[in-house]
Image 1 (cartoon, rainbow, N blue to C red):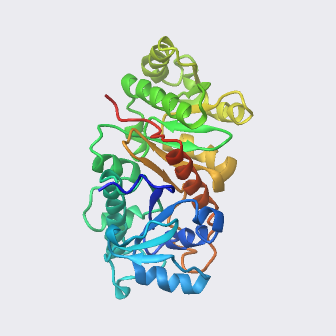
Image 2: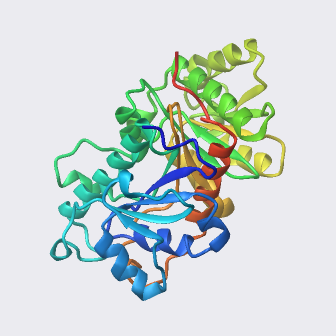
Image 3: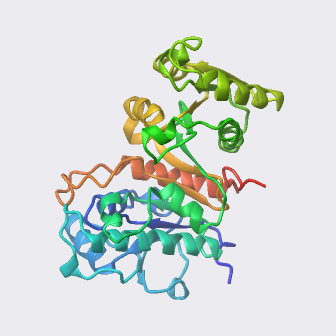
Length: 340
């Protein structure tokens, strides 16, 4: 059954950990009428929670269903009742195994809808890794989990902003693990970032690659990872007609890139890329997963348990993630296809 050949795209939103701000930012985002009716937004979560929260903030869905067959496929906000959690299991703002299990189930359901060709993309609200881990689940992040569901051998995290993009060689692992570089992985990260940028902007990017060590190793004084792994990877990329320079010290590179010298930065590990991007514009930076057969975008913030349930969360980042998903679907883009 193919439900995608209609005028408006069908896009799933997994509402995240029910105890966090995911449900709130999702409903607030959909109160923007032009955005709401730009697609069929399928909210995968608990209908009772969305109903209660909607009463508090003035949101009412266009439809509530328990399966895709019940949808009328008009644009708007449709709640798909996941039936994973009962009210007695939810305490907003607290880590809970039940909420972690439910949040992960929403992601799985939404991803499977895309793989079954029932939806064109998925936008993910934040999960709490501690809550998921309470279920003895092997989970280090959305990026890796969705890649596993899609049965792809590798994926990358790209932080998208109109001003600058960053793609990461490694993400959700210890810093010690992140320092164990691979020339092939760095090269493949450069390639995937290059391909994704072309899909997003329609032109080749000017790419700069970060060093791993302070001062990019200072010619071996602070480590040899740059000469051993990063430089050979850059040489291989440039041999493929990719505009790629480096390695550069990260502390000055991001300043230069944010001023327009480069379009895409390759970061060696999670915080090297995330910290400067969040400082630059936290509300309008979107997480995009590369290497999937489906479009997946996400907010670039966490569950924020400290403000959950207080009607304080901003929905700007969610709206940015939703608009980018719509743009990619309407352009027929999967920002990078799986390797091979």
